[in-house]
Image (cartoon, rainbow, N blue to C red; front, side, top):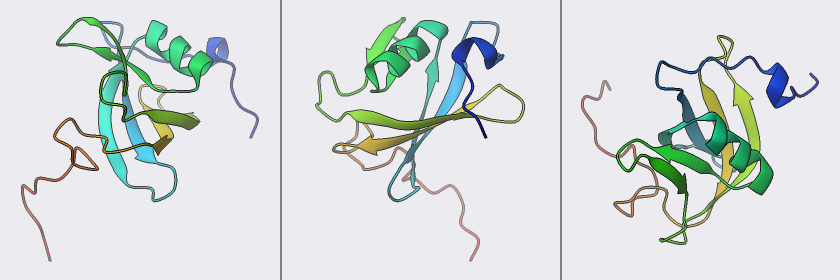
Length: 113
């Protein structure tokens, strides 16, 4: 399938102009984190080939790894079938989570075995 141009993607942002992005390790397929992007952070990500998010708590762009050095190099960016969620496959340098865990998903609520 031919890649979409950003202007042709018809992304559906929420009422705050944000779209969720699930971040996955390109090598292991492990889900690393979930964050938010606006159009500006998405354009920066595509230009820099490194992940740039929108920080809702700080109300500003967030270049992943700027202070920690734990960067995420963009490998592939996909949009879901409803155009309202993104999947970023990245090469992760260091842990993805601010708690220094590899993934932000490390706390079990329930496990069915």
